[in-house]
Each structure stands twice: as C-alpha cells, then as structure tokens.
Image (cartoon, rainbow, N blue to C red; front, side, top):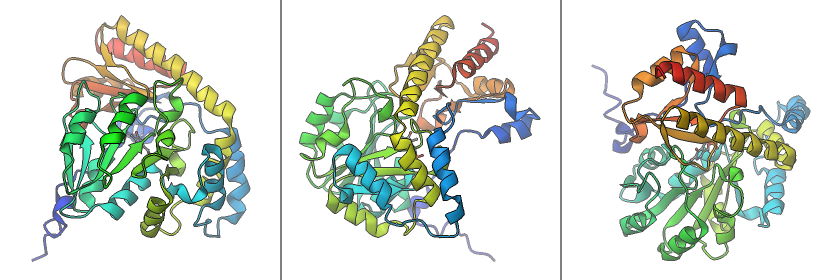
Length: 369
Ligand SMILES: *Cc1c(COP(=O)(O)O)cnc(C)c1O
C-alpha cells in the first residue's frame, strides 16, 4: 500500500487549486493544429510591444557571464530603483517576479493560526501564498467588483498579519483614489502589514491613482510591490520589487532564495527602467487599445468594468465558457475568470491595434452579431 501523499500535505495546501495561467500560444496551436503565427493572445496582460530594444541589448551583454551566479544582492538594480524613487537601497527587495515578493511576505509573516485579508475577485496569488504557509485567507466581499476598503478594515482581527490590496486590481481593473488609500492606511492597525500591489501603476496617468510610495514615510506597515512584467514588458524574465521600510526589507531578505533574480533579468530591468520612450509607447498603445476595445464592446452591446490596467473585464451577462471555446477556435486566446467568481466575464488584455481588431471581429462572429 502506498501512502496518500495528498492527505499528508499540510491542510492549507490540500485545499489549494493551482494557479491557472493564460493558455500559451503553442499549446492552442498544438491542440487545434493552427499556425502559431495566426494566433492572437490577449490573456496574460503582457505588453504587446515586445521587449524594449535596450533591455535586449543589455541581455546580450550578459550572456558570456552565464556560468556565474548572479549578484545575489542585486546591487545595481536596487541602487537604480532607490535613486529613481528617492528611497534607500536598503528599502528595496527584489523578487523573481513580484509574485515572489508576495510569497516572501507570506513566508515571513504568516503561519497557521494567523490570517491574511484580501478581497473577493482579487489576484489569485494572494490565496495561494497564504494557504501555502498554512495561514487562513479572509476573503472580503467586493463592492461593485472593487475592493471594499471599509469591509476589509472590519475583517481585521488580532490574528491578521497581512492585508493584500491591488490598485488597480486584476482581473477587475477597479481602482481607488488617493483619498481612499490615505483614509484606509490611517485606520489599519499598526501590526498589520499592508501589501499594496501596484503591478499596473505605470499605466496610470494624472493623479487618479495614488502613488503608494508617497505613503511609505507615514506608514511603516506599508509595502509597495511592483513588477517589470507588465508596462516594462519583461514578463518572461521574472523580475519585480518591493519598497518598504528597511526593517521589513531585512526580514524578507532572510527568507528569499539566495539568487532569486537571475542576471539577465537584473541587467534587462536596469535597461528597461531607463527606457522612458518604451514606457511612453506602452501607455499610448494601452490607452488607444482600451478606447478601441470599449468602442467595440459598445458596438456589440456588451458591458464592461471600467479599468485602469492593461486589460478589461467584459460582461456577457451569461456564462462565458462556450464563448471562450468559440474564440479559441477562432485562434483568439482571452482569459476566462470563472475561477475569480466572475463566470459571466472574460478578461481581455489590451493588444496592438490589429490584435484588438482580430479579437473584436472574432467576437462578432462568435456572438452572431
Ligand atoms: C501580473 C500581476 C502581478 C505580477 O506578476 P509578476 O510577473 O510575478 O511580477 C502581481 N500582481 C498582480 C495583481 C498582477 O496582475
């Protein structure tokens, strides 16, 4: 008789469902015998521009050193980030994607008997990171698909150590403004670490969205997490970072893998950070694509949740599983979000103008419009 190694896993892990990523282009090509070049993938909030040429050049410069371990302290990238944002390098934590940052927080601050508070329809990694360390996730019902910050405050108890909020949130695209964040932080108990996930902050313009870094000085229990995967276009390299108090950064540094960010990622992130033209183009393409998709939805009589990210959750007012399958047969990959409690929605990442048009044409055919 062999042992049941599922039953032997810690209880939090037994109850976990694995993260479901957007379907890779090659997988759909294999399944439906399609030419990968004809497939449009708008499923993982990736930057449609391709990587910054400066990042590619930096990567090429690193290739000869691949036999060496990377700089485990990420000195150069931390220094650049610190200079860019006016903080000390000791306040910066680097991650293998910002996903890594979320896990470092969970490993350092959560344990069985403790809990993390996050919202319904929030990023799927929050429950995974929480349960993986045996802690409890307290899910707070959303308000109009966005975070209900008052209800999240009310959910905090003596065993709460972490509160995850995303601004804007994925997959809803919902956001809160500076006033709401300020009022919220002022009321969070000092012992609760607020993880403010700003994976899409670079897309925000004007002052509709708060810059989390502005709140660090006043709130030592705040950690701002960001990534090079979205607006900086480096998702495959896996590099993200957190800015927090130096003390929290020191704690996270104790639990991370010694070489959690690889040398190509370090070099590319430094180069991407300096490529302001690329970032400006990312924003332009995103703004134009958002307008294109909104107009397309309007023409098809579909609703959507207004979004400040590089994606939009479209409301089909009925279960979308069949619509998603039909889109796949059209060679268009979008993201079902039933797993996020939104079975009537599909999340569509903003692509290049021609990719957005391909999606809208396919959708019109699928809906018989
Ligand atoms: C994409 C995303 C991340 C970051 O992903 P990484 O690639 O691991 O940096 C973090 N939070 C949210 C809400 C996201 O959508």
